Image 1: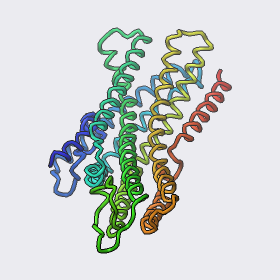
Image 2 (image 1 turned 45 degrees about the vertical axis):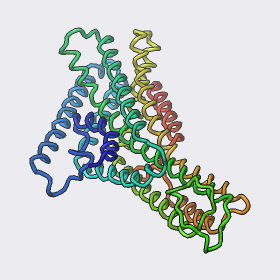
Image 3 (image 1 turned 180 degrees about the vertical axis):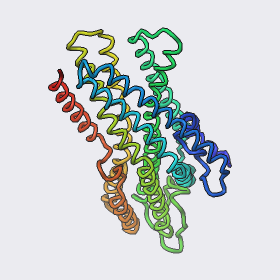
Image 4 (image 1 turned 180 degrees about the horizontal axis):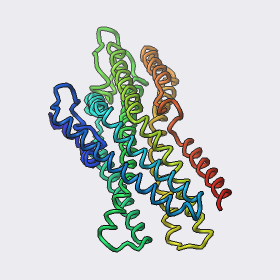
Length: 401
């Protein structure tokens, strides 16, 4: 493995290490698991994942029984909201774990496709993404860990927990929420990688079109075949000898990115659908408890913790949607940039024809993230989510005993 590929793999290394601890990652993110893989390694990986499934299932059963017995006499509505919130979170975590066993080959395949694209884009764009992507991964891990530690401390504080055993219990009870957040940020990380590479495509195409905007084409005897990939900033006369080949290369890169997007959506379709449902149920339950506590004038700290938990869940969801929305809009920005440049007078017609083929391709291959074709991940979905949560909270308050 060369130095560049090692640097590329480092961008996912930290997420891989964290996810491997919780069994929600394949054995290796870079080497495709195949029939030659050691059966002992397969057995250990599947066993480790199933241990986590059993662990989460036990907590789901315990919490459901405890909450029903504690609240069903006082308030059936309160009990129902609690059980639905936690059970949806646990169920999403269990299915995410099983999904990673079934689709464990997809992860290294996604990494391989991104690396093949980078071998074309990175050396020719003059931009290095890897250090920025490493920083983004570390930042996301740090913020995620900090929020979950704060949540555990807040729960222990409000419950008056003092013994080390109880602290460990409440920490373990919070693990499913942490694991679901890891899966969401894994999906966001891949979407972010796609968006960064689309930005590189826009940069190269923009330089290419500007390169041809004011150039004169010399007679055939004076033509010197050049490639925009090798010398995009050259201001001398340009040949049209390799224009089609140059644009075709970028079109192939775009097709590879589109296939990578499709693979990412198919890999994370079930997890992100479950994350959306969990966001609905968890936020409805937590917000309902917070509003009830506010009206009943209970401990104000408890109410603040409830609202912080809702904000944390919605902000995480909004963070994922924002990156999906940016990646979806990027091909449109490339199209508008091309249209603005080729509309200027004296632009070479041969180059214009090739660029318009690329524009047509981008219109046919949109970067919309539609898990299962049920909905599109964009910012409008966030507004719908807030509306759904608000509606169901109002319904629960109306049925409050």
